Length: 289
Length: 230
Image (cartoon, rainbow over all chains, first blue to last red; front, side):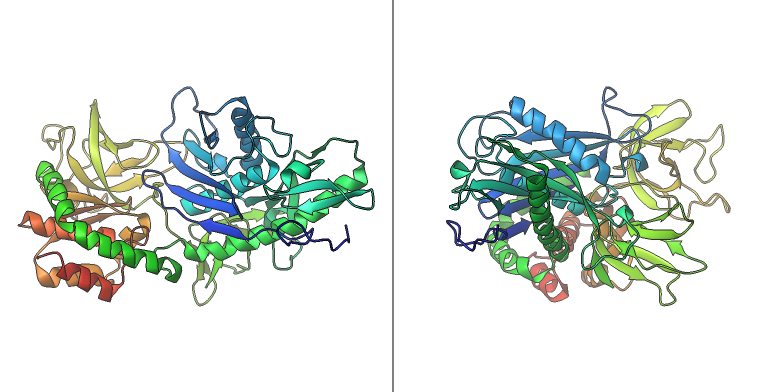
């Protein structure tokens, strides 16, 4: 654990890759966000509360419908299993009873893929632990962006990998990157729930958090102490994720500075295309009249 | 004023505490009450700390009583009309909830008619109800069917901005040409003017200023308006 041996990308064992959070403002959904640990990126969109099909309708709370799509092809059994897990992870964070007989729909899309193949627990094939963590964080960010679905707290996740160390024991790595995946002996995603409702004690700079879900699995047997170490490593990591999400709240509006350069480019493009668009819109206006 | 995420503790303590959107009070088994945030945004409070609320943006409308909305008549069911207000459920509008309406003399609304109405009942377990008059005075107060014009869609924050008399957009547009607007808090703005190009200009300006769209400021909007030939 304490070894200072650097990883392929130069990180120490307990350091996350650089996080990126972009609010995509996708059309025709109520909220959307892209989250990435380095290159491991996922996109999520949220609509809700919206009208629900009678088959899904619940009399006392909103129905939560989650669809997960892999990078290529249609969602298979592994994606379906992941969406069932994600439903369990996100449900405690949402105040679904505030909008009974409605639907909250989340669509997640992987924006990177490792080797083909499936299997939730296996690290490095199909849905790797880092990708699941990205997807959980992207869903949380999209829910924050939506604003119309009340939440009790938010869920953040990171992956922990397990590697044989040079001294013969095992070493735990926070947020394994794609390059590290083939050399891992196991690992998993750790999802934590952050909310002030967990305890009334005034927390430091982040609210209290508790472990919600993990799929930590290894090739060789592991003991309770190792899981405890992995949990502690992950907890330190998710606190960073929570802080990054909090910082991103200020970037949701278009009027913020970091989006301005892009908007300016858009303006120039718009001015060129204005004549064509105007003709388009006047047709709509005439129809309305 | 600070930015918050859902699930954070809010130091709201006052004998006469009033909590606005995005805040939830819960009491612990020991009888102490605490307030947490339920959405992300900017935390605001009144100078004496009695009123707290979160300022944030959203696209999906959740009905709240006494808010004015713009809806489209979808169907007629007996005496009532079913109106789409952009929320999860259709709203109900009583056929007699209009100024001067009686059993004999009812307004003639058709499917597809546009309405400016007030939400009179909003409860999570019931369908929202609308009215097109003030229940006390029984006068229309500007509510009723909207004829002609165009409905522009925007984010919920944008329609709150449009209702702010100090906001720059409508005064800039009003100084260029005469126009009529009706702002619904459900993200729909009805615009009418004599010329079609003015209506188009208004709806494009609303899109441009919308914080969920391009989020233009006052100076930028004036420049943009210069390119629009109005």
